[in-house]
Structure formats: C-alpha cells, structure tokens
View (cartoon, rainbow, N blue to C red):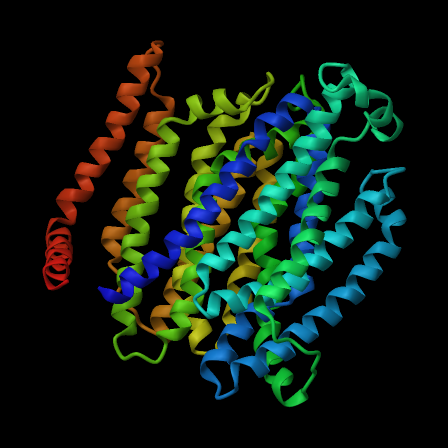
Length: 509
C-alpha cells in the first residue's frame, strides 16, 4: 500500500502540473476558435502532427534508456546522464540545422508556399525540446516531481502568454479597442495574415526562455561521449526509437492525415483543411484523459524501474493497473456525459460541434493507451524492447489502414476510430505476449467489465437528450452516479481494506 501511495502521490504532483497546464492550454481552444480561421486550425493540426513525429527522432528513445541504465546496469547515474545528454544534444543540433536549411522545400511539399519560416521555427522547437528531454528525465528519476512540475507549468504559462499577446492583445490594439497609443507601433510589425505563425512563434519563444532555467536547476553536466556507456544504451534505445515512431504515428497521424484522406466536399460547408481544423479542435476535448495518462506515465516509468528487482512487483503492477482502469473509466464517463456542455463553453464559433460524437471514442482510445503503458513495463524491465517495435508498428499499420478506409466513409468518426482501433490492437498484443514472457496477475475480467460498461455509459449520456438543459444535466450525471455505485459494489472488500489501512496509519501517527 505504501508503494501505491508513493506512486499516487507523485502522479498527483505531475497531474496537478499537467491539469493546470493543460487547463491553461485548453483555454486556448476558445481563443483559437474565436480569433483564427478554421484553415489556420487545420494548419496548426498538421504542423503539430509533424512536430510530434519528429520529436521522437530528435530524442530517439534515450529517455527510457536513461531510466534503465541509471537504475539497473551498475553504472553511475551521473555518468549515464552526461553521456545521454551529450549524445541527444549533438544529434538534436545536427537534425535541427538540417530541418532549418530545408525549410523552403518542405513548405512547398506541405502546401505552405511562402511560409518557410514555419518550418524554421519548428526546427527551433524540436531542437530545444530535445535539449530539455534528458534533464526533465533526470528530475523524474530523482523524484523531484515538484521541480519538474513547476518548470513544465512555467513553460506552458509563457507559451499561453505569448499566444494571448500575439493573437488577442495585438488584434485589439490594431482595432483601436485598447492602448491606442501603441497602435502605430504595433501596426508596423503585426501581420494580420499570420495565424498558426504566431502559435509556433509563441512555442519557440517559451522554449527558448525556459531552457537555461532547466539546465541550471539540473546542473552538473559536461559533454562526454563514452562508447562503453553509449553503445549498450543505443542498442537498448534503437527498438524504442522505432516504437516511438510507430507510436506517434498512432497518436497524431490521424490528425495529420485526416485532411488528405477526407474526400473533397465530404462536408459541404468545409474545405478539407478546415475540416482538419474542426477535427483537431475536437481532439482537444479528449485532453482530460490525455493529461491523466501523461501524468501517470511521468510518475510510473521511473517508479516501475525502481521496483523492478522486488519479488512482489508482479502483484504491485497488477494493482496499479486495476486502480488505473477504475480511475480513468470514471473520468471518461464524467467527461462524456457532459460533453455537449463542455463543447458549448469552449467552441466560440459555429461549425465545431459537428465533430462532437467522435470524442467519446477518443476518450476510450486514450484510456487504452494508458492501459498499454501499464502493460508495456514487461518488455522494458526484461530488456525485450524489440517487442515494443512489433507491437507499435502493428498499431501504426492499423491506424493508417483505418484512416484510409474509414475517413472517406465516416469522416470525423472514422478518424477517431483509427485511434481506438490502434490502441486496442496494441493492448491485446502486449497483454498476450507479456503474459507469456513475464506473467502478471491482472484482474482482467474486472478490467474488461469496467472498460465496456464505462464506454456504453459514456455514449448513453452523450446521446440522451430530453430537450431540457437542466433535465439533461441531472440525467447525464445520474449515469455517472450509477457507475460509481457499480464500482463500490465491485470493490467493497478492497475499499474496506484501503480505509482500514488509512485509519491504522493515522492512529500510529
């Protein structure tokens, strides 16, 4: 129970930063939908899909390799950190320079004629992200979750602040609504035709400002490339690189490929790029599930490695999985039954709610991604990372096939189904291979019950409409209460033991 509390505590700290950060980021949805054209949101969706894909190349699996070799290979953690950070810095600077120099042909390839600066700024974002990756991993390994969270949150606040400045404040200055004394000066540099441009510029500036703070906080790094350290790390990380590429294909290619897979005129009121913007905006409504998964991953990965040598770790991993499914299933129902209300609050322009029916599918997809993160620990602690490539590559193939076959037929729903189908495939493959090579006593039947019932309840709450806003709210959240009662009935014994343990600890203190 103590180890579970430790994991939950660290997840909570990571979660608070993620929740605050993502909430702040989430507030950009009404800003973007209110101030930018749908075509700009389509460009934003495509460019950030490319950035997410290349981010994996820039770090090439070295974060997980750092965790593994700094905790269980007999090497001094600082020596591992210095070599990992040195190699990542070298590769990131070389790749960043290459991307910067090829910005012009890339802008033509992706139909951004005259905007090569978007790819130059993307190169800067990717390079600085990579330079921060191993220092952030070091904070996680050392259990400095509060420092990690504060730096991440500061980065997000800066990013959002620049977005508000460039997209909102300058717009109203130009219109003469505020600070008229600055109108002439702002007009001299403000570009009214820039939309996604200012989003990328804000990201690049925020990263640039946060990098020296993070490096100073981590400290103690000198450039060092030792073959004896890096060769086994590279051999461990290489399958993770391909896993990451396949994984990011699963996660973001549905957004990046959507506008190309959607037939012209599928939605008469939208161009393909505008439809991609609507798709990307609705994707953000699944952000609550995404941030919980991210917070859990931040805490769980170093935690699992640190517990790898314990003889009780299979039972511990099974309990972590069980409560993870319960928590995330509850969250999915809570979000889905209130989805129309959430959409009405955050979409500040007409034409976005058309894609809302896909969001419960995305919530389940992200939940399954979290299940996969739990399951994947077996090949990480047994050094069988080759299986990660097989599994995620299969998931990537499923993603692309579903996009190409279902998006032309089902539109937004087809794009969401690609995410669900991908992670469901990965979960099934990882579960069966893991149980063969590293058996863990998961409560599989209970987990399947929670996943199935929560998905059905989510859609029931989303689709049930009485025509009365208040009645809808009460009925929809009544479904959530019923789900909580189901959990209580199924977990009475476990909850009793949990409360008994808490009471005992309070009495001892």
